[in-house]
Length: 149
Image (tube, rainbow, N blue to C red; front, side):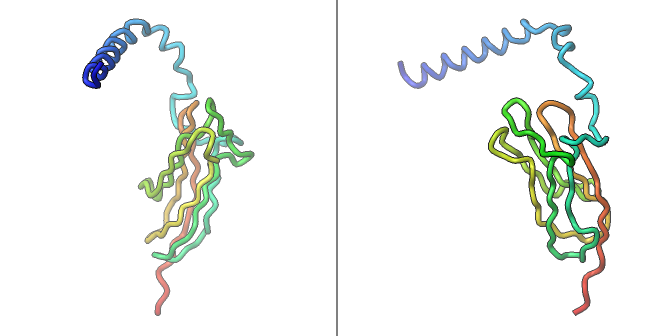
């Protein structure tokens, strides 16, 4: 069998599978799996899901500083194949400035970003687990003008 023939057989098999799968899943069966956990982003406190943002309260414009985000203010979120954090994102005034994708069992849900800001505002950490809608937390940060030389 040539590589081209094997590839064509594989593509034909995938096409047949794509056609067959939707026919086997009824709308009623799928609806039963859509839980309220996925209805909207979460902002309430949860000990294992609420992101903890560690950053200075005040920084100087343009100077680098660290922001550490740990998922779980009351205890670290698990990192198992069936229950893990897919990504952690940092925003400043609703503008994304950093994002990290995590491996299910080889990544601890904790990141440190080194950033610089120009103006005061709100830092927002968003964690996206594989089993519910996203969770977020915020921290106000004051940015002082640069120091005179």
